[in-house]
Image (cartoon, rainbow, N blue to C red; front, top):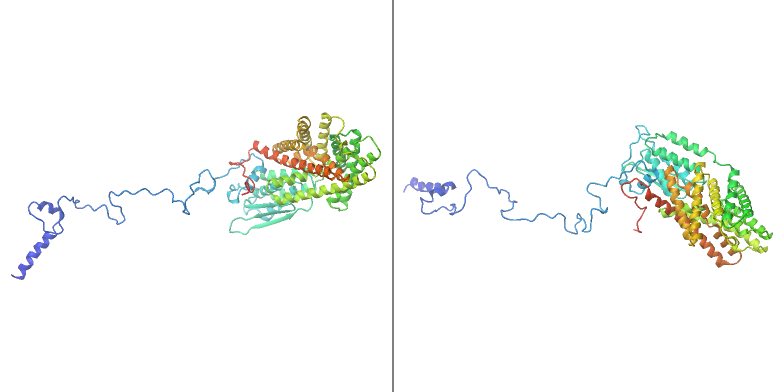
Length: 564
């Protein structure tokens, strides 16, 4: 066989081996058997030519294999999964869309709006409002901070609470576009810090409060200035704000010196009537208080600290009471001394100290309460010195003489409470437009106390707390109606509730070597003072339930919740 014959069968077999698949089925009937190893078995469906297989990726799943859908959340324990106890109603995690926008309504007082934002973190505060009170180059940051510090100084020196001072400072900064600022208030130091962004250096300024003067007329003017600055419709430039601030400092007090001395006498005389005194007791207590007021002014002019001023001012009323007892006059000497103590008890500082403590400013509250303690110790030293010498001279001072005797006279006592609140308002240098309202508020407080204690036979501490709560409620509502501070409407109204008689009885017991009864009376006086302070603050907080706070959410608690 030649080479050509040998290669021919191989060519035919090669052609048979590579016959198209579509032709295999056609030739299956002609040939008895299939000898090619690439032939398809009978019954196997072959796709038509020109169509590629649908499964081309090695990662595709085979047909007929069911795969469970992927889980919605990763299993418990993953760093990216939420706990099983998580609920969308809780505010534990920041939602995917960001922090919800807090909207503040414009028609609420600036105190509530600023207090709401102060209790938020800086990143959660609403976006700053459009600023139109400075040029295109932006506000002068150091001057704005200085203005806020000067306004805070006047408020803190006037006896305003630390939280309200911070709210006013924040309102001033925000009105000029400085939204990322943090004010800080302590008893004698004011500080404010502003940082435009996380990459910019902060600007910090501070100011020290040197003097304190209870001038509520100036306090009202400062509140009006802050209210004008916070109003978008009122365009107040930095120069105009500084000019108005300088006018407040230069303005004289609304009442002359002789009016303040007469108010001290009216206050002491009205207080002596509240504890059972008559006309002669009223005159004696008024004379003693006016002498003490003049002596205190003399000591202040010589530069003596307030501790010694209180000590000197407490001696004339006690001396007059002891002198009337030694003269065997038909006068209740205890009522005279008690009336003089009413004019000296630091109720304003006490209420402010307790309010700072309840709102989370513990350093400022401790300093204020320590100041109250020093004033009280000064009063104790002055009265105890006079009572000790009076007992040594044979003065028969009976503790029950002030409250015993005739039945209480409601009409006379209500009139005395009105006179006491009126005198207290004058001593605090209040605006003449607010004197009538605070006088009526003090009368209402005494009516509530008398109805609960005298008619209802309820403990004096509980009665005092409820009456002080009414004072705080009405005072806060009146303040929000006038867009002003609540201090002028509450401080003078708590005058009839001050624990003057309990203080005197405690000091008299100590002077007569009855230490147990004396300490018991002093403890009662402290309890009454705390009841006044807590009642005023609680009444102020209750009043906010009837007011719109200005936020879509309820006002957040200050600092911490339940100690955590």
